Amino acid sequence: MIKTFYYLLDKLFRKIAFYFNFILLLVTGHILILCLHPKRKEIEEDIERFCKEHKIGEQGSIIFRFVFLMKNKKCFRNLFYYRIRPRNRLLIPFYPADKSLNINSCKAIGTGLVFHHPYCTILNAKSIGKNCTVRHLTTVGNKFENDDYRPTILDNVNIGSGVTIIGDITIGNNCVIGAGAVVVKSIEDNCVVGGNPARVLRRIEPNEVGNDK
Image 1 (cartoon, helix red, strand yellow):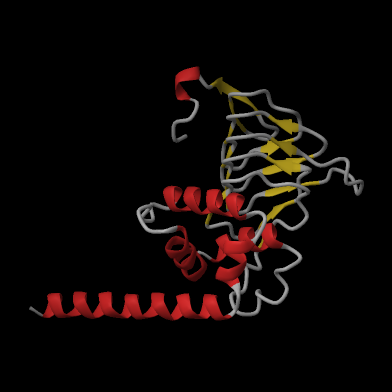
Image 2 (cartoon, rainbow, N blue to C red):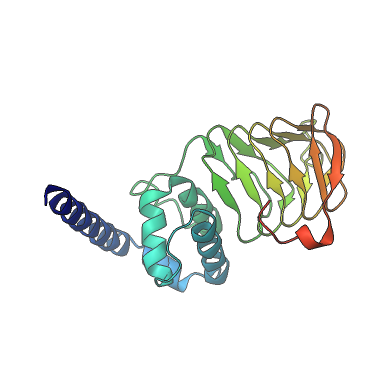
């Protein structure tokens, strides 16, 4: 009986918190920008993959899931604000981004980028492709001060924790970068790499591409 009471109470508080955040996001203009922004399709693809990777209910409307992510996933805010810049300046104070995650230096980011607890992560790439995954303590950046010496990351790249990717190199499609790897040379498509310096550990077979890595 007591467990049931606490369960119902918790459910009630969660609903109240959700609708409070819905109203706040509506009043502050977040939802309006989501609905009217030219990059709405890109943002929706980000939402769908974030929900899938974090096992959040995928049945609700885009706005329902957007509110949930803005409330519960601070790192999602970074990606949303990246998409809508420079219109993000007035919105950030209401729902601050994760200060330990820096993606603003990336020239281009494909849809479906997902973060898993991205503490102390800096992404300074020429471009990042579609459906990539990044974890904590990851650094992607310049070998020299020249911006041309930045990495290019292609589609479906899965990056483990503590990874460093430096220089004018290309990480191929469907690659997996093992935790703690230091990558200073280009990697071909469909490779699993690891170590310092990183080396190819094995090739990914065609039937593995598209599966969870």
